[in-house]
Image 1 (cartoon, rainbow, N blue to C red):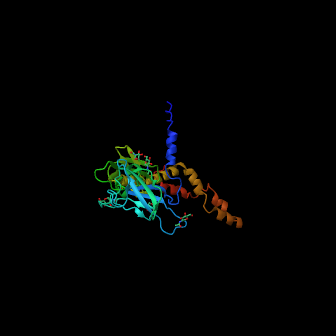
Image 2 (cartoon, protein in one colour):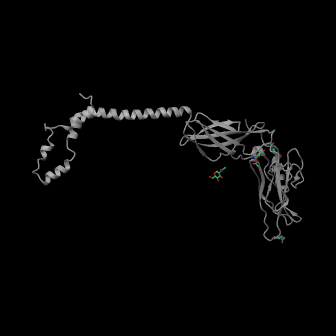
Image 3 (spheres, rainbow, N blue to C red):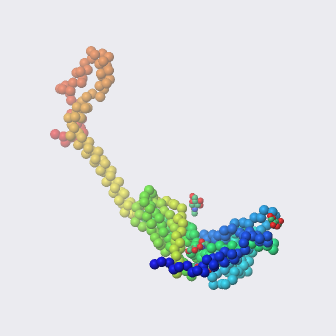
Length: 334
Ligand SMILES: *[C@@H]1O[C@H](CO)[C@@H](O)[C@H](O)[C@H]1NC(C)=O
Ligand SMILES: *[C@@H]1O[C@H](CO)[C@@H](O)[C@H](O)[C@H]1NC(C)=O
Ligand SMILES: *[C@@H]1O[C@H](CO)[C@@H](O)[C@H](O)[C@H]1NC(C)=O
Ligand SMILES: *[C@@H]1O[C@H](CO)[C@@H](O)[C@H](O)[C@H]1NC(C)=O
Ligand SMILES: *[C@@H]1O[C@H](CO)[C@@H](O)[C@H](O)[C@H]1NC(C)=O
């Protein structure tokens, strides 16, 4: 389907729109503040803008802030008297206006977080003012950046980890939004797994390997059901924890150690026996070769008159001490 053609009067409207604001700062007009932006992080609501500086001016430039909601047809001054914004940003020298609700104080609530808020700011010097500059509209729950959960406490259990946490920021009791949580965890080293969403402040990672180090990070997600908006939050810092041994592991460990000890002893004994039985002749041959050959050869070389060849003679019938050694090691032999 082709898009509908643009109405013929649109260029005219755009032209009028562009011509509407005064063309550039006149002698009586101050330059406007630059790029006003709302900073929304957890419960923080701060409007910031670039300062206006006048080269030949020693007196300070002040700023004025106004707000409006779509439902209200007028702009209202942020002058500390307009509820619900009991903040004063009228004639201030700072280049920001902080609307963040302060604790539980009821006369300092900030903008309701589901409201659609528009803000604008202008510069002021004595009787002169700049044009208004509008910041993009915002709804706190729609535009907020969510930090990691707070007060994360991890308690190792038997083959498990218990995690308690608090939300990144407090939301008032009947609220249109909810927080859920995701745990990213992995055996160290290992591939990460994700558990969530969990709608509780207590999270249990079960069926973990006992006595194993796991690392984890947690993040919150804000969900605004009515608007179907999900705001994923930042991951918390990585922490690592060792799970405890569970009862069956302790039992298994005991058994394992016993079995391993037994097996290794039996293995040593068995292989000893096996080697002796299988390579009896060879061993005899090796061991029969006197260990001090080099020395003896050395001596022989020094004094070839010595009867070394006799000593090396395998078939010497006089005595065969290695047979008796074999008998001691393996009494059941032959
Ligand atoms: C600053 O300079 C501008 C022109 O450069 C002039 O129009 C303005 O009046 C001056 N302001 C003051 C306070 O002298
Ligand atoms: C919020 O208000 C602005 C300006 O009135 C409007 O353009 C925008 O569509 C509104 N947003 C919502 C989600 O209603
Ligand atoms: C808030 O989000 C809407 C889109 O969801 C966007 O149009 C608007 O510009 C955002 N406001 C700010 C201040 O980022
Ligand atoms: C949330 O509220 C509780 C008291 O209700 C307070 O102790 C806590 O500090 C608040 N948390 C934040 C992030 O403001
Ligand atoms: C997370 O780590 C960064 C840098 O390692 C540190 O600055 C920050 O304070 C940590 N945050 C918390 C909540 O511990």
